[in-house]
Amino acid sequence: MPHLSWLDRLNLSEEQRQQLREAAEPLEMVLERKWASESEAFQAASLHYNCPVVSLRRYQPDPETVRLLSEQQARRVRSVPLFRVGNRLYLAVSDPENLQSQDFVAQLTGMVIEPVLALGKDIDEALNRSMITDERSSQALEAMTAGVVGETRTVQQLAVIEDRDVPTVKMVDHIITQAIRLGASDLHLEAFPHKILLRYRIDGQLREFPAPPKPVYAAIVSRIKITSSLDIAERRLPQDGRASMMVDDKKYDLRVSIIPNVHGEGIVIRILNPTAVSMDLTALGFERDILERYQRILARPHGVVLVTGPTGSGKSTTLYATLNQISGIAKKIITLEDPVEYQLANITQIQIQPEIGYTYAQGLRAILRHDPDVVLAGDIRDLESAQIAIRAALTGHQMFSTLHTNDAPQAVTRLLDMGIPFYQLQAALNGILAQRLVRRLCPRCRRPDESGLEALLDLGLRADQETFAPVGCPECNGIGYRGRVAVHELLDFTPSLRRLRGDQINAEDIAHQAATEGAFFTMGDSLRRKVLSGTTSVSEAMALLHVD
Image (cartoon, rainbow, N blue to C red; front, top):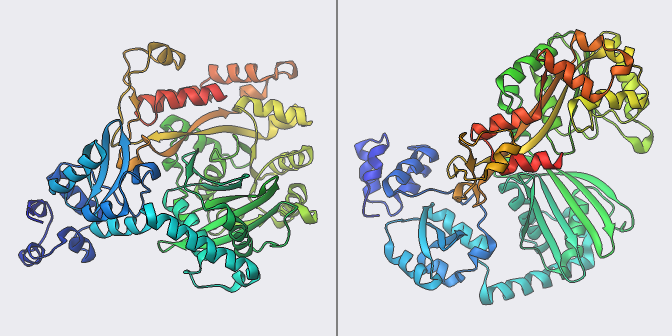
């Protein structure tokens, strides 16, 4: 590498600098010998070369863009096409100053090249992983298919296979590993008449990826069943199982659901990463005033706190962080979940088993005999579980649970509809938190939004207020969003709400009364604040409002 001035930005000794001057891959040497962190080294190199950086270990190039170069062409220039924006091709390179290689790719594709700095070894690994094209593609596919089909004759043997080079094992590991590295929450495999559909749910959105061939699908299903302790011979009934997998020195828990359909069995795998769950309420996207009010609710020694929202809205994460805040050696905390997603220190966690009659209601009755201070019931699903939860709160316990309603005030009317008398809610209910997730704008590439005035007005914003829109860059896989953040609605069940008459108990009256005394924070207000702070976009906020 001819120019090493970027090393001046790092705190290196003269001896280290001399070694780097003689190195073929100075950036890799810096990282291998831990002379600087990856972020420090990448930032220094990025500033020198005036281009973005990407970690190809955590980034999955767009499959269609990858095919712009053959394997031979990509290896010749040691580059990986990442994604396209208009006529611009973002190309991962180890040496951004090698203009000859960039010109070669520009001539091949007819596109303007935007170099993106990556480690040379990561480029090589990405080429080995992704660049299976042209003649090699068909040959590899045929060999893989033949190998897997051969395994199906003795599929029971897959239970004891540890060799990661066995075709079926390798294929399943690749599918799951890719999902994990892309930050997917769920993996979907579905069979259709002439193909297999593979999709990952990333930041709440399903995205399609290259799928395995149809002839090997039966072996893939069998392998997943075996690793999840399911019955490989059962193809008529739904099955649920669990497994775990180590990826990049981290353990991931997998919840597997298999359901038969017309063309075969469909598979959904929920990916649980214990290290990715924040146990700190302050890191969950709460606005300061909402968080302060929520913490005042938590400080009350007994009563019910409900968290509402659809499946996948982060309710469990919020409740785990809540328990973590109030936990301590002086409090006995017991949870009842279906299933237990993450294990918490110093907290007794119990999983219900409806198939043997161990329901939420049964579990709650048993828990109350174990002298708890705090109880978490994963869900209030019927009158019996609601009654037990209310009774627990009335007997001096802190009670947390979830409920499926569109907003916080509707949770009150939902409990009334179940058959809970209002006088019990008056005495037991402390607060209700409604929650949704929106995609977070990539801070690296977001740009000022030029949305029309109508969208701003619909969201309750003025035309002169600055907002931001997604663009797409290597850091966010060209999507414009990276990660998700919660938006909240909080209803503090204040003394004035407890004094409402029975004929005033409807969602509108509850919301109005709470709002007049500053005890109701709406989701719309939370959304507007996140839009104005540049956390999310107008379009993302409007999509949520329209859904609701």
